[in-house]
Every structure is written in C-alpha cells, then in structure tokens.
Length: 193
Image (cartoon, rainbow, N blue to C red; front, side, top):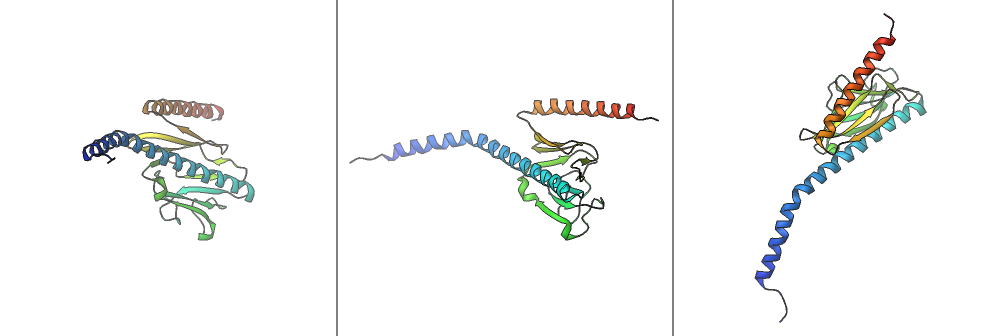
C-alpha cells in the first residue's frame, strides 16, 4: 500500500509551522506597509479631488480632519478621519450638510497614525488651484516609525515621500526643517519693516 506514515506527516506539518513562524513578522510588516500606502493614496486622491473641484467650480474647497463628517476639528491628528467640503466663505467649517463632498472615516486608516504640521488642521485650495496658507506636511507613522509623508506646497501640488528606514525619515525631517527656516528668513528679508 502506498501512502505516508503519521511520522512523515507530523514532520511535514512541523516544517510548515516553523516556516510560517519565521515568515509571520515579515508578513505583518508587509501588511503594515500596504496599509500605509493605501492610506497615503487615499489622502492624496482626496487632496487632488479638492484641488480639482476648487478649480472647476471656481470656489474654495477645503479638506480638514473630522470624526463625525459634519464639523472640522482643530488638532493635528488626521487618524480619526477627514472630510472634503466646499468652503466659499472660508469659515473652515461646512456651511451645511450639502456642502460636504466626501467623508473618510477612521476605519480606512488601519491603525496608521496620521498627523499634520502643527497649526495646520485644514488644507484649503483656492479657485486658482493654490494652497491657502503655508506648506503642510501630513505624516503617516506606525509604532513611532515614520512610514511616509504627504507634502502640499503653496502652489497646491501634493507630493509623497516614502521611507524605508527610520534613518531616512530623520534625515528628511532635518532637511525639511532647514528648508523651512531658509524660507522664513527669505520671507522676512523680502518684507519692508
């Protein structure tokens, strides 16, 4: 009779179990990376939609952090969700439920921490497509490790930065701070007091 013995089957099952135990941490980090990438793409899609609507409808359109989809929050934690709305009066709040275009709830972030530049809880695109205010960086982190940034400059262009290591994230953060300080001094020098 052909077949396998119980001992042979147990050995094969043990080998499969050991291989799965070794590969599981890598699989968890892969899932975490995919969640961050998905969240980053979702956020950049909503930013592009806001900018496009501002230009085509010739009114300011804003995207802000929100937990309930009706009111904007003023902190910098985007992890609980955000909403996109028409903001013709620039009041930083939707005027009515009809002005809310899209709402993204926290479940889509998948455990990723999303924070923005301090003091910037809203991104407003003007009818010419420009970002109202200063540059804003929205960072995606997991377990205190920076995974990616979405940077929106004053011209309204959003770009993404992905990090493969903590060292790369720290180096880029230092470069961004240095660039921001340089711009501050340039702006101060350009003003007449």
